[in-house]
Length: 269
Length: 269
Image 1 (tube, rainbow over the protein chains, first blue to last red):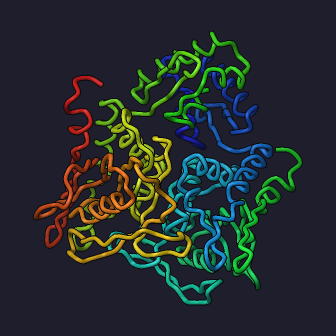
Image 2: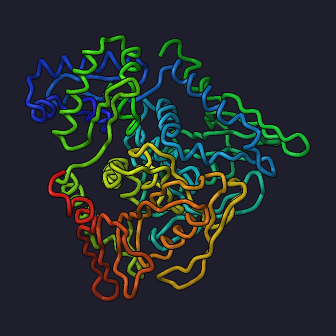
Image 3: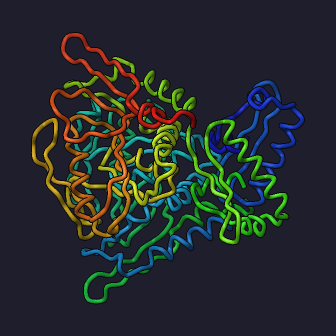
């Protein structure tokens, strides 16, 4: 039952279904559910709700408690704080972290925590390095994700495209999304790996408006330093990285604005 | 405990760790483990091994029984069998399926089943559409995945590149992989979304040889029809698609060679 609920996060599963599936009485299912509820709450990894009535059932929403979130962000910061990650031009090598299932699980759960009480229909990212993050978030929100492409691909069918200005390089680029992927009025969460000038984020916002859909929130794994005005604000970052190129090659990573934004105003979670 | 084992697949977890974590006696842990063992075996979704001794512990390997695999492949085939997926040039639109967490879970578990008894160090794919599959397989094998890029990117650091001939278009292309991602002697599983001429697969094989690593196996979600000799053989496909462009637009999808390859020779699994 734990397995079923874990693999169908945020789905309302009727108790009748469990009864038929496991051939157990309603009372023993309720008992098991209350054990699961207690366990996920104690470990700070989720919330189990049970809704009464004929249309009721049980729903497991994965999330992280503030304590867990702080612990994970500390781990991420420590992993990024490594001068050998510095690349020419002040870029930071993150591909290894974004290819590790354990890290992606943590990142997905953190970002999903921000939307526990909101309706999300689809997660959007831009190729390439945002994809693993989008997929992890999608797993925990149990919603599909869509990939915006930098150029037109035959396997996408007809697409909608927008031009956007890269915030850091100031060049005009184009991004496209397959027409089939998103319906009008969809609630979209945007994720990406790295935020510099915010041009890509801004482009994705325009694309979402083209589709007549709504932006629920924006998230990045890491936020870099940027001189000047970003093209977006209100983007949640898990970590913030200062990369110093030049003679003293040095990276310093610290917590991003995630903890403040998600746990800052609420007294208890 | 189920949750911990599910999130750390194929890891050997010592019973002492569980004892300390949950504050329970060894006997009740053993009892719980045998319930988990029985449950995953009955549902055909995994194998729980317990190794005795000081260095022993419990290990949960996710897999699918033949019955589950057949059911899932039937579902995938039905989902692809839809003429509206046909794109000009005989291409097939699959991006929606490869953005759905439920489908990706199934695909990941199917491909991981093939390697239950093998050592895998890393999963390799090429951008863009292979990434979600690689990530799902990586989740179930609990190993990192690496993304081969079509062009050099500043955020990858120094790279190793190979030229390859696209099997279907006969053009020479280039693919690159960050030097930091793979160590010599690593056992690599290759995955991609679609197999036509096999040029991309072939290119990834060369890249793996450049790194002094070994190919453990190759997998695709779907195999298309191809006139002439493929550049690779021995690639496992979940489904096989015949797409007929031209006047009679029609797609027919059927099971690929997966079931034969994975369950064909073994009498019972």
